[in-house]
Image 1: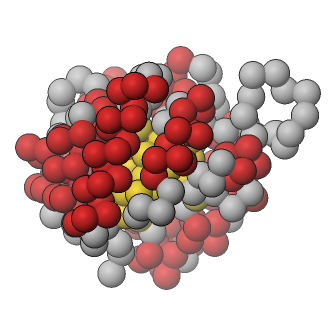
Image 2: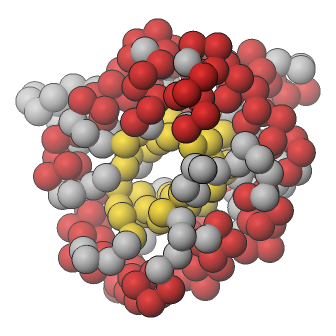
Length: 251
Ligand code: PGA
């Protein structure tokens, strides 16, 4: 049995005042309801201290949205994995499609970040997914496999026992267009099968999240699919009631 995971991705959003209300409501609800799923919020680095202050002692975890492939040192503007663990982060997103598309992150660069996160004891949430053009060209499987293979080549299949994969079709992110549960399930099954080729036990335990316009209204049907083990939630993670309802759907 894989425990479901719901991860919020605030992206570059938030201010102290609004965060406090959102985090407090999450902390209070999670503490009271004791969901049977895990919940983490990936917040912008300036707010990790605030997340830690409010969420400490609650079942809700927190993490970063990106991490440097380098250790501490002369890398102006970067944030190391060690800094994230210093702030008691448990998770970090790596290879989000916005990082790949807007900041030129390559499969190899993402694999290096994944390795750095793992090396520091963080759980990397490896994001993979195809663009609309790639889906229409019928190469979704190839793209997702290539993204996954870069990590397998660098860190080996055993590393995936300590990681999470998030399948996020780029065409469904922030667009309001969700993949249908069947469309998502098909790719999740493909990802699990690819990992199973290297190690069936790791594949069986691997949590594969779906991301892309998940909201309270569609979460339950997505989470009911056999290979969907939770969600990576962007826009809806900024609205307490929506995010809490999604957590409840996973629980
Ligand atoms: P969305 O974003 O839920 O706003 O579509 C998901 C993500 O980018 O992780």
